Amino acid sequence: MTDATATEIDRLIGEIAFVNAPEAVIGALRAVARHRFIPALGLAAPLDAPPYLIDRDAAPEDWRKAVYSDVSIVTQLDDGATDLGGNLAGNLGETDYTSSASAPSAVADLLTLLDPLPGHRVLEVGTGTGWTAALLSHLLGETRVTSIEVDASVARTAAKNLGDAGFQPHLIVGDGADGCAERVPFDRVHVTCGIRRVPYAWVEQCRPGAVIAAPWCPGFGTDHALRLVVTRDGTAHGRFPRFASYMIMRSQRPLADQPARDDADKHHLTTTIDPRTIAWAPPGADLAIAATTGLTSNTAGDTDEAGDLHRLWVSDPTAPHSWAAAVWRPHTDEYQVYQVGDRPVWEETVEAYFRWISLGEPDRERFGMTITPEAQHIWLDHPDHVISPERP
Image (cartoon, rainbow, N blue to C red):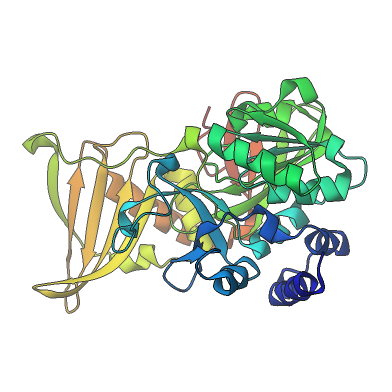
């Protein structure tokens, strides 16, 4: 590693010092240079600024600066159907990010939750560019690391990146939800894609005491880091210690909303509930609403010929003709709601929000999850205080 690269890594580690990662994780970040895993063309995606294209050949210094900054770098659009090197100006809002190198702070944070120890066998779900597989290989030894990637093209690139960097973990192409039965038992499961539900295969393939660290991304408001511990009876229990948000696992993607099929599907309602009350609720409310209803949400400010407005969409991710949009406008006593389908998704959302209020507005850290062979559910404070329906 050159002195210049070491200096860039030091600057990056200083930038993410707020993560408070253990020394072993920081040592891995120092040892495994991120630039080896970033393609020549990428889309830097800061949290607080518009995305921008980085091109190693056209602007190497800008490319390098982005690589050693705390930003995620998108490496694939629309499952590979949209070329990153094409003319994307004005079209990014119409594309989906489907693979990336996660922001270094997010990587360090999830590895900190995972807490891998010498001798552990780790299953990584979502190889991506291969950087986290390399970090795990540095921490544990490449023979202890199994990494699975659903996209064959992404997997080939990751294998080359890892080989060029001197690492050869066990790599598989397949659906990470299935785990890897031939490599059991695992002491840790490191999930680098968002999940709406935890596949029981991960629990089943772990030894008692194993840790599963994953971004739980139910899709309502903010997302959450989940840390589960596997018990001797084949169940797993855990909590949501903080924020984490990743691209959703392909096999768990929600269905996109579709227009009403006929007039009977269209419902025009009014509400006295300011939609922003729910749209801007804290993470504990988002988690409780997601757990109780299984719904997803999206929110955005806008203007039209009548002036400023703010929309909140709520949707059933399993039924494309079941959603609602509530619109806030200033100086309004009642707000318009347009609902599609027979399921009263707006009413369910409001009811779930006020149920969270009645529970004392608990923060996200007070909620937990239990996984059994038959189902999974969310609880408050203690596994006996279940707040969500058991979902198979």
